[in-house]
Image (cartoon, rainbow, N blue to C red; front, top):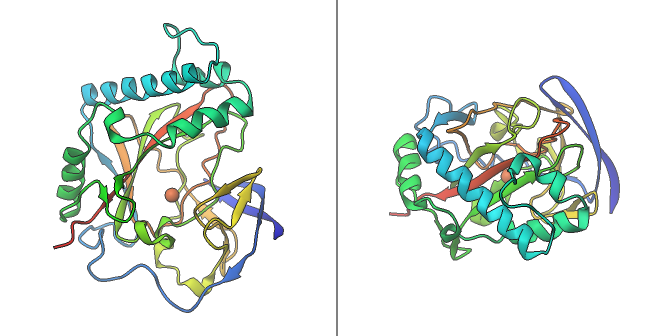
Length: 278
Ligand SMILES: [Fe+2]
């Protein structure tokens, strides 16, 4: 395993952090299938992502409430002292103050099921399917479950995954990624994406194997992309508002959502919808 410095640029500002892993350049092939892929009917197909309006105000508030309840449940079940009546998810870092406790909480929030939330995930799959012009489902056949994950990024932390493509994992090859801001999401903390990066061929990408990258002691399932033939990874934050979501191809390079807010925990939801095979 090598220790390398991952250098990237987010909204013109440079960042760097240490990654441990074995890095290699890939073969001369484009994994993103140019024809008949999940975003191929979209005018933004070459950019690889878009921001879409998806929830009404009421739906968004209900969703936020539901996320808050799940976080509170995870805190309480770990016997972390909390006043449930005054708890807000922005202030999560003031309640969960140690790394050990945080790891216990995310151990629960990474294994939530759709039944834990008060929204109809199949109805949501239909909405996104309508936008993309394909029939979508929430059911991931290879995993035998739907995917819904709360992502928590504390202020001044390395609660980030490396720059990556989800499409490297077989079960995420033919899905659409959906990233939904819930709380504390703004120009300082929102998910960064590398526009057009799904069109970069594998021989121009320096990366690790799956489960082959460690940041701050945490091993990630997704391979870390360290750089491309053009140098450092250059990302932007589309910064969707409440009620909106970023939709993107699983071959778009994204991640490393450093939270520059000094006093706000960032919470977001991550969903993935596979295409229905006819
Ligand atoms: Fe991802």
